[in-house]
Length: 94
Image (tube, rainbow, N blue to C red):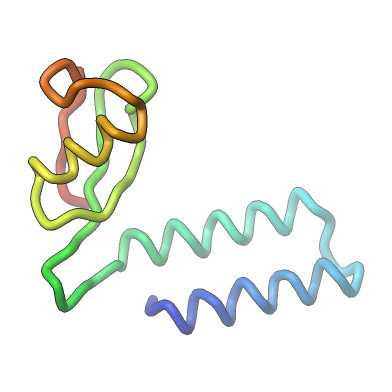
């Protein structure tokens, strides 16, 4: 899914919420689904791709976009405010 498609789907979801056709929980669920699809289908001309952290601690499950596994590890470490060497997770492409 490209960015424009994701934005259109989110706009449609918000319209349904505003029209009373969906409650907040359903709206949140749909938006999260759209974002997850966008992230896992993400392709970049700059060589960026999504990476997921798996393991222990607060970094588990985080998904970031980076140009390499080492860059993804650094981004994840920045997000959880930990030294990359101390990060106790595996980072792999999605």
